[in-house]
Image (tube, rainbow, N blue to C red; front, side, top):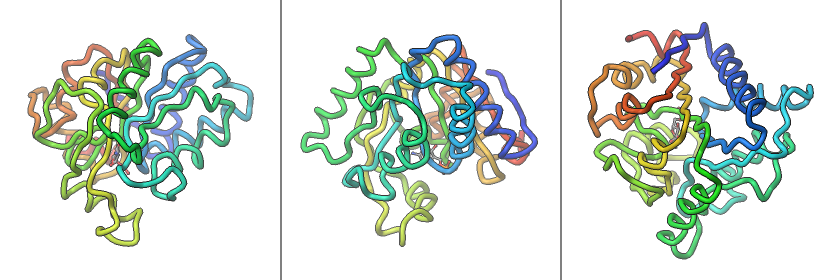
Length: 241
Ligand code: GLP
């Protein structure tokens, strides 16, 4: 596991964007796993700027998002569909047919999960997966006490996650209770992983992540078993290391 500690959020975002740009330069048809939440917003902003300057071409990039809330339609302002289009896809030249986000409104959710997993397989697997980190160490929406060898599946959100994400909604009651997420197994199959974290509220989860022991209580600890993981975190997130 490599760890880059950056001065602040801006630096973290720039470093992550440079790493993504480099991967796309090396492989223009990169299969890119993407995350939501507030952490990667700065990185998306940097990538959009790089695209506008002609530094990156997304025309052959294929994307797979980690997760989506169940029950929020794509045009709901808090859905991850909406987030991804508003903050990233609408500003770059990725082809709509190359964008994949689980459908949290699918009639048959189990089938949707299987189809999603199959689409990742058909694309040749994820080359580079970007991850954020929940305050409880969740990755994607894989909450504590999850099984390790999971594929894309339906999850019940943990209390801490509902609490942490209520800031995006009018109240905690409005936060969906369930989501579709790539499983830990899906994430671990990515060839390369970059995990981003910023701020003191992530410091504890970061300490657990790099401690070197494995516990399903902190899902991110499983990353220690992956051969190519880079943590790009700011000083505050690194403050308890
Ligand atoms: C959300 C997402 C995760 C994200 C995490 C952290 O619930 N499902 O993919 O990494 O929580 O979010 P934030 O970056 O806003 O702290």
